[in-house]
Length: 202
Image 1 (spheres, rainbow, N blue to C red):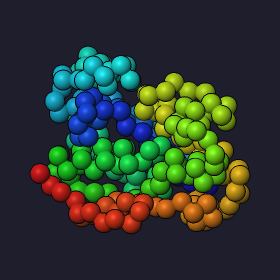
Image 2 (image 1 turned 180 degrees about the vertical axis):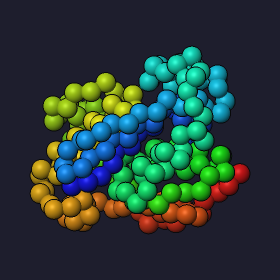
Image 3 (image 1 turned 90 degrees about the horizontal axis):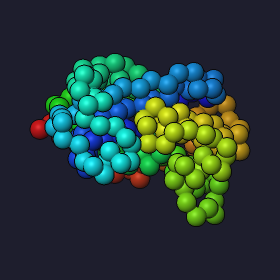
Image 4 (image 1 turned 30 degrees about the vertical axis):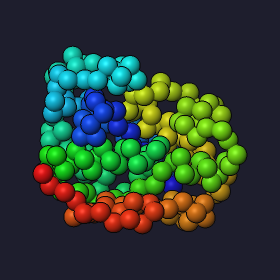
């Protein structure tokens, strides 16, 4: 069972303002590595007080961090041709798509799914499917709203779900659970519902 879990934190309400990215690497059904990048946003030092209250990252914390273009080659290599999960994937994939567009960078190629949708299918009937309530339910402890921690917690949550529907690989598991896949590819993006959008270069 191999996949990646991804999480972004943003500096402002703008989708293209990532200030932190975390990716948890799962190989053979085990989290093998968690990679974390602090990012200096394009509009630094402007940070929304509301965003700071959520994740605790301040302008001074990323003053010496690389810009997006400084980490993208490394990140793109990690994502290339992988299956990626994010909790509330619409948010994280919009951050990625918007940031690539505003920097004039091409899309990588990978497929993705949303762990909120997965949790609804595997554990129906709960009042909240937020990351913290779901992790609390399954005894997964983590520091919420830091990218690496959230990515690792998401990966562990997916692994708990896999235990409910044992499968040899992620594609078969998602098929059995009736979870739809989205995709990034050069020139465009497909949402899990099947809607196609073209990549935009500003």
